[in-house]
Image (cartoon, rainbow, N blue to C red; front, side, top):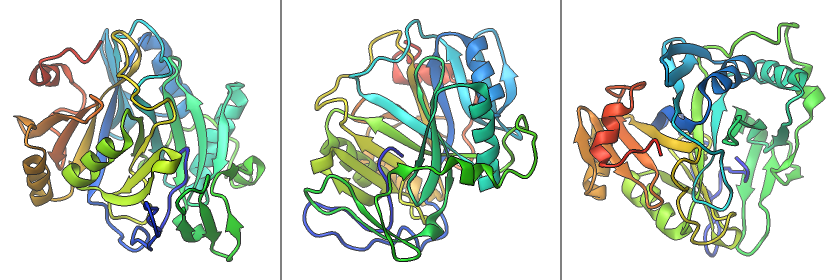
Amino acid sequence: MSNPHGTVHACGHDCEKGDNFTTPSELITFGPVHLDISNLERSIMFWRDLVGLHVLEATAGTAALGVDDAPLVVLHASATRPVQRGYSGLYHFAINLPSEPDLARVLARVRASGRRYGASDHMVAKSIYLHDPDGIGLEITFETPDRVQSFRWDKGTESPLVIDAEGRKRSGVEPLDVEEVLAVLPDGDVMQPVPSGTIVGHLQFQVGNLETSYQFYRDKIGLIQSIYAPWARYGDLGAGGRVGHRIALNMWHGIGAPPRASGVAGLRSFTMRFASQERLRDAVARIGTAELHGRDYAVHDPDGNALFMVFGLPTSDVDNSTRTEIFGKDWSS
């Protein structure tokens, strides 16, 4: 969430109020995020012991971690190098927690580990930021839309203007009051895993062309415009819920950034789950190049990120090997 989000469209000219805080349901949610990493054991320790996910399945080269029986992250030990800056691809993705005490527990665990982290108050969410052992960006967040009254980002301004629920002007990128969050920790058990209700909340991508990528996710996939701020090299799209921040796009690594090189750690694929078959069919028709495999439709976005679109549960959340075949390319490299 490196840039904030909210209830008002940021457009090329005048900003108009949107409906991101009025619709209770989401048109699209996320399945598991598949990552190419370099050392499976080391990455399992990060996601299990620090983030707090359960290991659901593990083989010699892969591991699925999540909550209950739902995988959120699937690791593939296929990379030979850590993340490198200056390329398009995954900027970070978010694990959304169901309550502030849950965030406090993870925050306490991270702080006790001595690992470097960032912490921001976006008003619409309280977030901490980490990097996995390969440098893949992770946000752990608790969304708080009730704290925001309005949001606008006017053309040419460097940052948005947020009005909080008490009518005060805020920037939406303020330091998180860590002690205030830790004060809601109900007990001293910092090792308790994250609970049921924990989900993948959003993905943010570094893109080569903001306009092209934004049009793909808005006009082809069917997400809802929340922020389009080309002067800040940033865009944000929602899914009809109270927080308009489900796919975010930036060009902060430079215009025209190329895809990551072979063997570099990063995103292998992610899954979008459509709330209705009609919306899925419409998206497939608009895209035109999606390939069907079982109930999964496979496509690349303009920056080459591998995306699977499904209605309800995907046919295979854990095993990505057969999915590789439908792209005609080994996405493990």
